[in-house]
Length: 424
Ligand code: UGA
Image 1 (tube, rainbow, N blue to C red):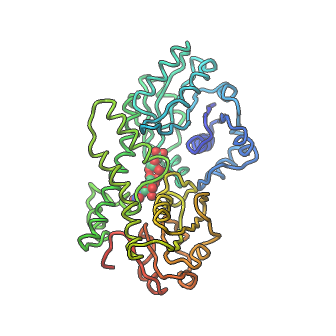
Image 2: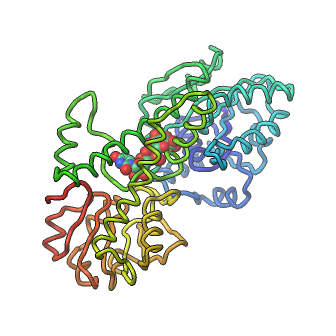
Image 3: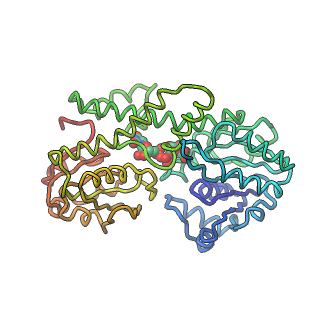
């Protein structure tokens, strides 16, 4: 099938490579000439395991082409995916101006048989809004909702093995085209109406954010009452109704999705006249998690961080990605810096201009008083902690991801602090 993907961002790149892997011929539209140049030269603007290989294969099989002009990109397409950003506006609402202006502009080039598929996370009612825009432009191409559920760091696998693909359309013939498009994937196809499809995406992200925030609160409570959160979660997770996934204690959620989508969902509820206090509490509780960690670190320095040197392992918002958007590591580091500490960072993939970046895991703790483990990179488990102890001025490790083995840290002569385990 001939397919177009508009937007060579994270979602668009994975979608393009994944569809080419299924044998479709993909035309990728991207207005940034620099990005197109990079892609033409075989370079990807993001780090995502397995993506480079899929792209190389697609290029070798002539299944992907890059277009700086969206009109040229949609030529001959049966399906046109929109994978465009929906950043939050000042109120936390998803800003649709980019999508709307692209759709208005594209309307002249979309033929009646084309299906415009919205991949981006968009507020409930957006599909209907785009339908109106197309009608106003005299364009009768269909609009279908197909929200993406990829996680950064495992996006290629998520595309190839996702549990479900949600397709929101009122038209059986469009549903059939999408069914054929995704043929070959093991995922369950869920056909529904566009509004339900749009809400499904927000409901999934808001639930996951709620769940991990709840378990972070259980971790904090474990600290207060002297319980061990690892034991508590083991016992809780064995209940099949609850399960063991997505309950790792940490510094709260970051990235480009949960912070944006939880706020956007609140505005969706507010606009619909529905009071959603659970979600308000999740957003507030999550913010407090980073402050709580900064407070605990400050307490290690007897309440004064003036002159303290702190090295960070991890700048990315989670392991497996170079993305630092809304990264808890950066929020905690800024908080500590504002209280007088000086910060250095090291991350296996991510870069940030906000702090001095070190060249490696030992360099970052050179003459440091404390090491913060801020991202759960498995690479950190392979660092020789006796080298860390030798390089540091102080001897304290604060593991904000409960990544390291406490006994290994202690046997290197270091003092260990982590989340929700006050007695280990
Ligand atoms: C999230 C969802 O998991 C995807 O299903 C969704 O498609 C995507 O948002 C999106 O809307 O585009 P992502 O933001 O890439 O994916 O990352 P997650 O792995 O979900 O992690 C989100 C945050 O939760 C990270 O800061 C992570 O460190 C944190 N987290 C996750 C925890 O603190 N504990 C956990 O147990 C799991």
